[in-house]
Amino acid sequence: MPTRALTPASVPKTYAELRREVKAVVFAGRQKIEQAWLLTYHDTGRLIQEHLLLNQDRADYGGNLFARLAEDTGISKRTLHECAQIYRCFPIVRATAQLTRTHYVLLCQVEDSKQRAKLIAQVIKHEWSVSELTTRVRTFNASLPTSDLTEDSVTNSTATPELLKPKRGTPGFYPLVSRTAGHGADETTALAVDLGFKMFLPLASLPGSALRGAKTGDIVRADTDGRVTLEAQATKADFYTYRTLEVRVVDGDTLAVTLALPPFNHIDKKLRLRGLNCPEMDTDAGKAAKRFVQSLIRPETEVIVTTTKPDKYDRYLADVFLVSNAGPSKGESPKLKASDLDQARTLSVSQLSTFNSQPGANSTVTFLNNALLQNGHAVPMDPDAPVPLLG
Image 1 (cartoon, rainbow, N blue to C red):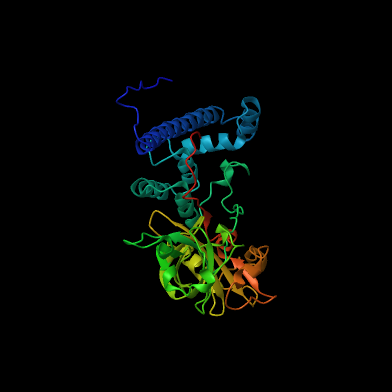
Image 2 (image 1 turned 45 degrees about the horizontal axis):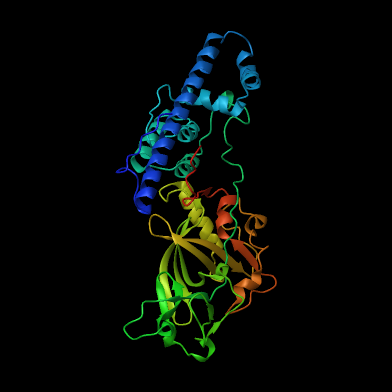
């Protein structure tokens, strides 16, 4: 493979330049690889389809062809079926940056050719990822014609997705950070409690006896009575976990919440559930996802959220836990089962009792993110996954 010679003038001088150049090269390389794979699938599908057409008068020939070809070539039957299906649905493919081989495999699950064309236009216009397109395909409840498939020819869109590992900290635990001190100020007066959401509480504004000797990196615990104490046993895993004062369901994967920030504050935020994507609200599936969440967040339900960094729309991502003394409601979703919802029971419920009431022994702790995935109201999505160098 030819490489571009680097002259002294073209060598990245700073880390920022190096990062930018590496990302550009990797992106361009992955684009070429994806386009090559797409054309490879399409050409393979053309060979299979034309061969089947030539031998269409031979009884049962097509039924045995994929198994025989898979055994003789080492290519899986699933891949061979996908190749044939891509060519069958798209005699001419568009090799664009937005449409990858996986996009085309998903589009083949939509039977209606006009709907496929509409989705292609939307993928190109909005640069939908594979996860986003998967949501749209599910919305239309599309599937491939059974006469063209074996049971393993495409990904089963109704299979239980891989579940998320919950991220749950402890409400009321925060790190101490150093803020810029004014002229003549010392390190102590620069210390502040990092409440999250770019909100800081100066340590100097708090009673000092319980915080004497505190330093940057220490962890404090704050309660609703205004007490702040050092906590030597806490860890970073405890951070940025909050109790909600008010919750409004915007859609299946978005909540508008008022969060308590003890000892003195609260904040209104719109949170996006981490690791999943629900259908848009202008679809029946999107409306069903919203009703599903509303059925779980009842007036008596205590809602705990652990937040992580914002997504590309500047919405904080959240793992959401629902603590209820009653059994899970069946709400408006016929798929909802108590066994599906209790995915957080293996975690220590005592973590939720840092302040306020202790959840009862019979409390049900529901990890909302996994409940949506398990009940078919969302598909997995990892917007923060690193880009692999090779397919």
